[in-house]
Length: 396
Image 1: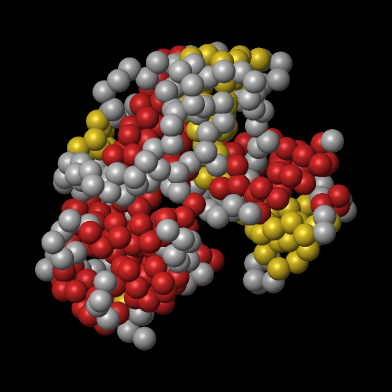
Image 2: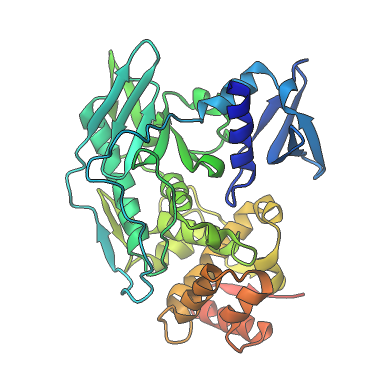
């Protein structure tokens, strides 16, 4: 039974349209390889190797550690248990809504203790929209202190007039896995240099408590309220993004640009200041951000190649040059949000409507061009940013 569940889980991960989790895999003889799971075929896990090759690997020959790792994310669901208030209706389109100038989460994020099992190291807490699955016991006050950021990010994403209405819930909540230490996070497959990761196949965000500023004090834990991270809102955006927005022509420049946009917008104590986010966006992309760290630092003289190639490149290529591509994805997304034509976001909204209608690749991008040539659009983007001190050079 466990083997069949493992096969089902792997197939779910492999067919997801968003991120796959790259990790070091170990076979039954102890040999290790770093690879990305792509799909399941003939009882084999097809892995993308570092050199780009796609190799089938028999599932039954994976190490016990890898099987345990995969089963860890097969979170329990209790479909027979009613959720208080019922399931939230799937959000609809909101393309006609105004662009928010400030988004503030003002409610008290009431925390519910679902389970606290010391023997199994299973501690589950809930806020309005999230379930936090933790391996250590936390007080309600500590959970409440970081739940504000999760709930504020959820509110921000839903209020953007871009119909970011995706994401799947279990037990009526979006699932978050909290690991006590950075090392336990890495051991579970979290990228070593990251503050959190979105696991697309299970629609889970995994976070080490250290990224939330939670640290042990005596026999309990407390939170440093000054601790903040741009990575976490970024990953939460991915959790809420509809699958259509990960299609060819959008995957990469827009899917990451949108996540960066939310993450870089100034945040403090449950409030995102959207109206004043242009300067922080430029500082983050071109330098190291307002506080001198964490930025993309690609400079103000940006040479990108052709815009069409940038928008259509494979996601593996996009992430292969993350600093430049993520930064440019943010700037170009921001152009369509606030600097394009009538500055009403009309073209990007029509583009997203085309994605929702099933268009992708060049067919969807033709809607974004809206009668312009690629060269004309490149010229308009370059002119708009040149007035702001950023020089774009597009070339074939």
